[in-house]
Structure formats: C-alpha cells, structure tokens
Image (cartoon, rainbow, N blue to C red; front, side, top):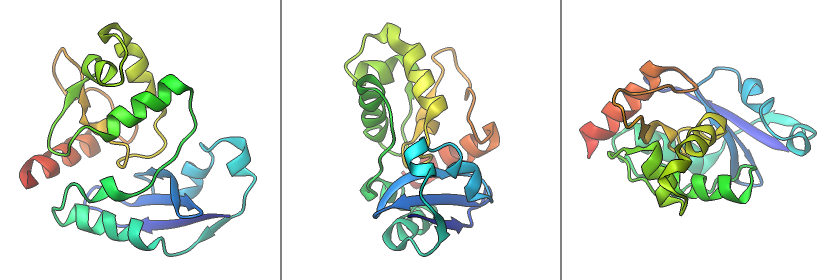
Length: 165
C-alpha cells in the first residue's frame, strides 16, 4: 500500500507518498495521484490511501519553520540505474542553503564533469522533490534553470534555505 498525505506550504500543497515508511514520491501538487502515476509499475499496482505520514510530515513542518536540514533524516527511495542512484545520493549530500552546478553534481557522484547532462536528466526525473533537492542545482551559465514544479517554487526553496542558513 502507498500512503499519501498532502501538506500545505507557502508555495502550494506538497503531496508526499510512502511505502512501508520509506518516501517513494513527493512533489508540489494538490493531487497525489499525479505523483503516483510517475511511480514505476510495481508501485502503481499497489493501492493508494490517504493517511498520516508521521515523522515525514513532521520533517516537512520543521523544514518550513526554518530547520532546513530536517528533510535529510527522511528515508527515500526511487528507481534508477547505478549511475542515477549515485547522482541522487550526491544530490542528497548538497547541504541546504548551498547550491552546485550540474557539472559539480556529476563530480560529487564520481562522474566526470562532462556528465552534467546526466546530472540534469537525474534532476528532471527526480520523483522525490524537495527531499532529493534538485532545486539546489543551478546552471553554470547562471540563473535558476528549470524546475519540474516551476521556477517560482525553486526560487522560493532557495530563498527559504538561504534565509535560514
């Protein structure tokens, strides 16, 4: 069973989905089914049910209250190749209040800096924002770049973390 909870944030509802206490999807949408449909087939075969996600929901509340490292304690799991998993692990190691370029993210994952495109692809396919903080990755050329949930959400997350760090 996939348990889902919707939490209010200053930039709109955050839907979180977990299986057996491990976060499998999260995103800024009022409809958790939108996130559910992005899950791999074996997880989509499970029933979706509303519930209380306890410590995960508490971590979101703490993050919003300014404890910007609170999301780090939440167990999260998503599919991907070994390279993609290294990129997701590297993403989770980028401290709140800091940013890296796509090339720097690739280097942190043990890949050549030229793997910036792979880093960008991992961010684009990330199922667990903001817990796997792809919002902390910026283009080396400047600006904020894209974000699955829109540039205003990315800008808010970065400003929130900068103000609290």
